Image (cartoon, rainbow, N blue to C red; front, side):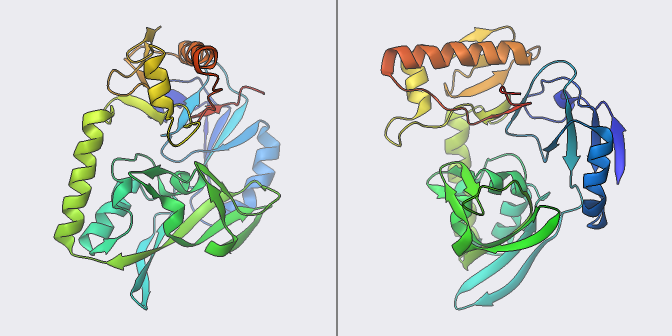
Length: 296
């Protein structure tokens, strides 16, 4: 286990804002999981598991958190093929772009709709990331998690997932995703490539995929009433405040124009949420993860 003091969240998240955590713990092998609880108690502060930092809005200032980064979970392999299904195991630290390239190279279909989603497998599974009608958890055969200081395997039939959510028990226990095994099907490499390219350019035309962003800010209150449409109708497409802005391409993407801060981001989000509530009666639920959470 390697440890660093006062890491900057601005340098570790795709939104490029945020203050300093107490410490950063980089887990380098499975033995580090056993050492983790004792080290966390010694340091103090709330643990926050951080992968690629693509769905994080870190607050400003000195933050009472400890970053936990299981960076060694990089395995990516085909396990077996049974009855037309190909099972692929991916470690939590594998980037989504690497996973999708691997699937395309090997002619494995099922995840093409997730092209353009930043971040890692662990984070994507933990929030059940989705795009173009594809939810990542719908393709899972099993996951391996760390919960209550023990490693467990959870089969698909015991995974409770919904819109941008994942639970592994009715008690909603805290856990860290260590790896996921996906159930995919064989298809032509050229067909998969064309499908992914179409999805990517479709997304690029409507979303700020190259901007400093944390992805969608709010969850869709209803499938037929997406948050982006509500924010657009409320006049927030392109709305700016203190270096932060709702993207002119998609009103539900908050972007950092280069000198933004968390205070401005949260103020702009609050203003947008209140405008939507007053005009349409919907209370928008945050999809981006605010760290530390606002209740702390």
